[in-house]
Length: 480
Image 1 (cartoon, rainbow, N blue to C red):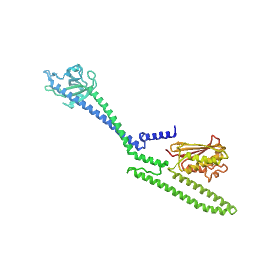
Image 2: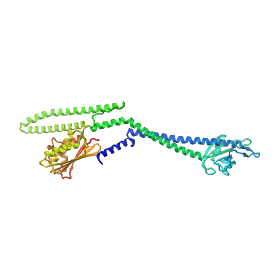
Image 3: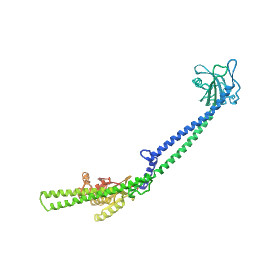
Image 4: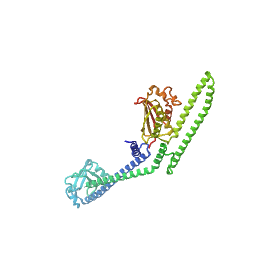
């Protein structure tokens, strides 16, 4: 897979995570997830309520039918001379047909909540309608009112809706309980169908609302993402300031970012000037002291010359570090093509070491860019390649490529004598020039180490498969 394909897939994963990943600390995902949660919970509650209302309405209609049957039964009931309850003709044909699904029953309360059946519809045959043990007590508390309930096992196993009411018949001291029941299978089926249609409709509506929220958040927060992309472009060197036209709420932020960039550049330039002025101010007195001491002999002049040289080295060292740090900070947004610098250094050094027959084999992707100034990358690769060419037998191998997002790695190897492991740390210590960093080795890696560290990178020394020294550089890379 090529670097471009990898970057494209990485960008796609970031975009997917931005919109649909776990909420975490992302404002976008938090808005989408919260809105989606509220929408789904609200629609689910609405579906439950609508289904319950539909079922209650259907049961209410059944209740009205049952109340009419009870009233008809009450009207048809008479008291015989023996004080028994006799139910005359009921015109409802369904109650006359066996197991038709519509029933009535008359009973009187007995001891401990039991009910003694006095009469029943022909449709019931010899079966009784179900009732709870405490029904008689509840009916006495609501005397004359109708209590409705569900039963799951009718005469033919069907679910029933039953209504019961306790009434007092003229000529009879003991109250009578009138029952009416009807098959509610159709109501249950209609309720299930209504619930199914309602849930499907709510899910479709929820999906539409979540999509609308997604579009709203995407459109509403698009200026923030554009601002982030512009800041990334500044950091990667594709532009030097934020130029977009943003809404009133975001425009002040964009202006503050531009002011911060300008202030940072101004501060870096001012500090660079101060460091240069200080270095030049110290160099002149040190040069005078060294010149005066150089014309005299003795212990004191030797001491002055030695310490003056140390002071000059310190001034040059810290001046170089300050300039490197300033360039690294100022290099925010600078892009340097790695392959161009490597090609330039390789051609130049092969000419310099033409008599030695040095061959510099380098490889780097065309789209690999160093996040920093070209001068610094030239100095880094120039020092490393010059050292490698100086100490190699004939071959120098260089490879560079991305290691992770925002990072690159470069490896410089040679087939020379290498460097003992116990001298590698010393080779990276501070020095003034390449041939002064580690006496007797000819390696001047301190400048490379200082510049690399100034950019937040790292230098590692190890053995090369070619037989010589292997230098591994970790540096910031410009993305995109």
